[in-house]
Length: 637
Ligand SMILES: Cc1cc2nc3c(=O)[nH]c(=O)nc-3n(C[C@H](O)[C@H](O)[C@H](O)COP(=O)(O)OP(=O)(O)OC[C@H]3O[C@@H](n4cnc5c(N)ncnc54)[C@H](O)[C@@H]3O)c2cc1C
Image (cartoon, rainbow, N blue to C red):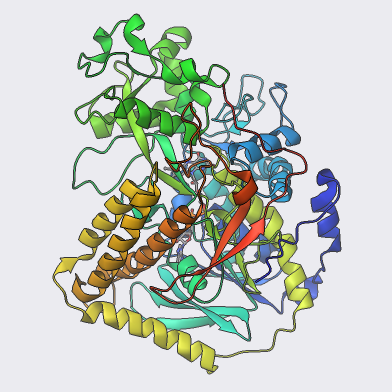
């Protein structure tokens, strides 16, 4: 398959404008004749559904939570980037573009990234107009802080709960449209398959999570804003419910899956404390504005941090990367934490932790300032660990956090199935091999508020969309296939719980396809995951029936998909014989231990096509070209 990214050419500053002008429009009266399905109510799906309805389309919107405003986006803490340059510290659209392309280790499309940086300005205006309570300075201007990979302050925030405040903005806009009857909202409803008719996405099959009813919903286009797949690792910072089922089932219906091995490991999470833990907690990257990361200089130093004198501390990020210091990007910070812990200098009971220390900032600024900036995060840490970060440094360690991979989309955010769009974390996005902090919220809202509502018109206006109904063979086939999988899961009646399989899968993935990878480990993982997947279908025990509420069944379907996705991730990681961003292959590193890219052979997006469970998928490549930010060895020194 020839992948056409549909990226415009010419001066990058005007590409989006010129492209938009070339897109067909649907006149307001005609929009009323069309229905669009939006799956997901996070920042991407919620903003898209509200905006499409505002434009006049009939929208059917789905989420598996009891309310749209419980989408995982609500958990986002630290902030959202925008190139407003309020601080007059040298920021610009071009700098945000540059930082993002470089931060992603030159594995993202320049055109997309430039558009994202450009649209970031509109997002802040839109959210302020909605009443999102961003932090402000004494003057009344919106305040900013810094995130990793940038030397300017461009992160807008609402204490440590930016995602929640932004989501309330999108949710209000969505509720307004629900009130107008323009959006039909389907909470507690899980999409389990995509309906493809004559090669076009025309609907979805869902299971109602309270009644167990399986039904289909038809439309002229389908938008997936269903989030990321970090929970394939079992332990992650994602909400427990986040899963890959929607995008995975779309992949099995023909949508290509891009860069599945590009996963982000966040450097500042509360370390794992035991085998039965089911969730990891993020400590926002914003804390690295004021917190200093260190470990003891000596191996095996078990003294409490307060008894380790200054001269015996190693502020290793500040030492190795003097220009960016504690604000190096996430992949670099995570890898360095692993290195010092592997050297035996890790702290805490497990030795798998480093200190994040607010002492100097408290001395410099006063406790009240730190409390104002990070109060809720500090309280959360104290509740979980029983330690007070105002008195003693926090212990942190990297954890799975975000997935840069996802469904392949063109510049219009359309997947390889005409009429199927993917937005937010669900697409392979604009972050290349490593996302910069505070850029996920920016991308989700850019896609939902500003990009998709422009590009989808072109598809609707230029496609001949015949009327379809539930009696169509493709609808019946998709429903039957969902019913068959659901039945099979409840009928297996094995002896092992879904969670025990998921935990084992997660350990395999963390060990072999986590913070660092080797060809040998990936081959081993591929064998083991395949065996575990087969065992799953023989031995899984799903409690209860398929009628009515059954959370064991919900989980079982999601874990079945994680198995298949995990294999694709390992295969992708094995195929990419280079290190870039979050994908660190131990065989490919510089003498200083940094990621060594191979631009000659791997400057492409790897887009995989499904050919059956247990069969090798087909690899398609979209070559990446860089006209503006020329690939160099990334340096934060
Ligand atoms: C703890 C934490 C903190 C973070 N902090 C920040 C931050 O400060 N700044 C930043 O930029 N990014 C941050 N991120 C990343 C960011 O929160 C996410 O990338 C972003 O919120 C994803 O938004 P989304 O709309 O794409 O998906 P989500 O918010 O995950 O929403 C997914 C939606 O899809 C629905 N859905 C999924 N599957 C189905 C299905 N099969 N059927 C029906 N509905 C379905 C869900 O119900 C939900 O409504 C953070 C992430 C975590 C884990």
